Length: 340
Image (cartoon, rainbow, N blue to C red; front, side, top):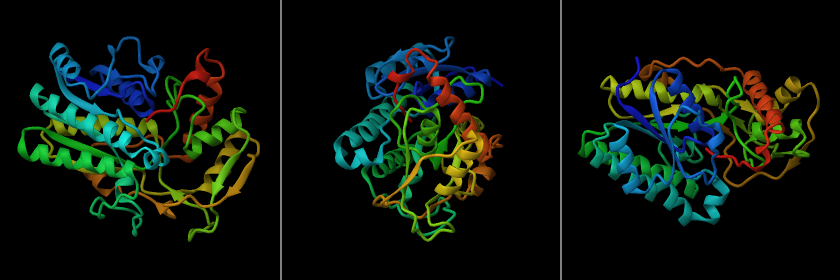
């Protein structure tokens, strides 16, 4: 049933945020998108969804939106996501991911928002020693990106203890794929994620793809990751919102499928789906890359009424390739940039 109030989606013109907007609209919910377009694109926001260009850390703007649109819940995607850049530009990441979140939360508290969904990350675990990783695993981030997300989790925990606000922080594992109907996907030529880069090679916008290390303690020597389709991740946000609206308590939840694929397995799947070989080259290990990152999804399945629809690596890859090929047909496709 559609909510009588409206959901504010920050970063709703970005990759994951735009898919969440699609899921919310499909469920009949009212949505407002707030995005500064520093990394997103207005073109992926549905025409019937109110769009406001601005910063989620602007308390005056956010306060006005909360009043004008009768906002009852917030889903917070806006932020910076590139791990390597967080190492070279830590203050920027602490500003975008911590200060902005702090200002947003203050506005939400003053505006009477009771439900808050936060876009977090498995990077809060750092190089976890266990696999699959349960939420009880100690949080020991190894880069400013992971630390900035963890600090925001702490703010949420403390604010929930001191107020009526309740939250769900969803810790993403490896997000990939695109909307099966072709309405949104990961935009533009800038990419750091395996499936996106491989899709660019298939689409002819990139010459080759690097395999960063092939001597890990895994079955084929390459890193293993838990890949979740972006549309399933979007629906998990909708389920989390329904959970909070039904009176659910604040939770930290992993978002993945609970099983992983190695880099080589993913590239083999890309070749299988595309019907041709990839130009893959070996490269040195990247510092801090753990051999295996797979989610323990027991708490997610137990807590939320959520059933994944696209838990198939070929489906993930086919939608990613279809989206990448479609970008060449879009007049502004080359000018868009990837965003969380």
